[in-house]
Structures are given as structure tokens and as C-alpha cells.
Image (cartoon, rainbow, N blue to C red; front, top):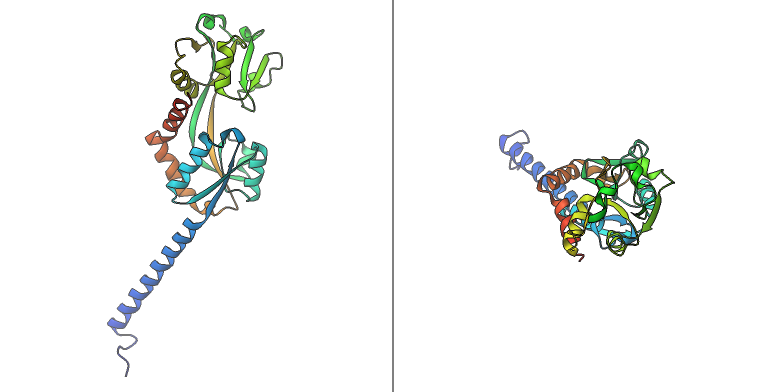
Length: 253
């Protein structure tokens, strides 16, 4: 004898409850499965223990996911993300061409300003862009600056590996000026105790760089665009990325 009639209120109530339970268990299993996926990422060799690795680990932690970070040049990183062999890339400038092939996460997670630095006594020597002519200018290898400076082959640009190298070369008189992000340089000068010896030149470019996170269209992260946007917005509001940057350079002394 049947316990309940198929169309009885009790039968319908129990059936509805079971459906809800099954749906909840399915959603929970999907969440567990998503969290078991390891994010694949890469950074430049010089950033393997640096800020880009810190940013990626921060994002993975916010998503409650594991992450595996390797090293490779920027051009290859972009290609690997396009092909789906890597899930995510940080430190990316915006371009329409890339946006057609990758999923950019908005807003930009950081906006950094390039500035020229020199010894205190020489700050007023650079009153205009033309005054850069004849000076030995330290630049970080592979860094991308504003177009006028980037394409000016008449300037004497001396490639260096790091901000630390720029500061040391300037203090030893090997270069006259260097260009780097103000946000990083100010923190580094304070950390090294030389902020009273090095300052910004009178002339300064107005250009700034916005850096984005982008993910592969073939990645499981593509289903987490809204969540990633929320992570970035919260990090900006709390100044998490800039605090990581300041702490990183403070600890490099």
C-alpha cells in the first residue's frame, strides 16, 4: 500500500525538498570541483619571487584556489594564455588586439606613473624633454614607457636589470638619470635610506601606465569573471596591491 498519493501535499512537499537537496549537493560538488582546479600562471624570471607572483597568489587565495606559477618571457606568456595553456596573466597593458583574444578583468588593478630621478644637485638641469639629450638615462630592460621616449633613438638609454641597479648606478655616477615608477622608487629610496640624495627632476612626463589582469577564454576562470572583478574592486578599495608594492620594496633593502 502506498504511503502517500502521488498528488498528495505530503508527497509533493517531500519531492520538492529532495529536489532542493539534490540541487544543493550538485552546486556544492561543482564548487569543490572548481576549487580543486589549479590555476596555471607564469611570470618573468625576475618576478618569480616578486610582485607579480605576490599578486597572483593573492588572487588565487581570494578565489580559494591553488596556483602553479612558472617563469617565461612576456610574449610567450601572452601566447600561452591565448592558447589556454595558461589561465591568467598580470601586469598587462590594454590593447584592442589583445582584448579580442583575451578576457580583460576591469578595472585596472594599478595605475603607475613614470618619473625621472637624479641626484639632488642635478634636479634643475632637466627643465624640459630636450634637456634629456646628452644624458645617460638608466632604463629597466623590457620596461615599456610612453611612446615619445620609447621611440626616441637619439637618447642615450642604458639598460639595467632592476630599480636597485638604477639607484646604485646613479649614486656611483655611472648614469645621470633613471626612469621608473614613482610609487616603487619612492618606497625603495626610503628603504635604502637615500631619499635625501635622489629626487625627481624638474621636468616630468605626464604619462602613466594602467596594468590589468587578463584570463584565457579557454580557462575555467572564464566562468569567474564577475568574481574576479569583485576581487579587483575590493583590492583597489582596500589598497591591497599598493600595500604589497610598498612592503615589497621596503623589504628589499
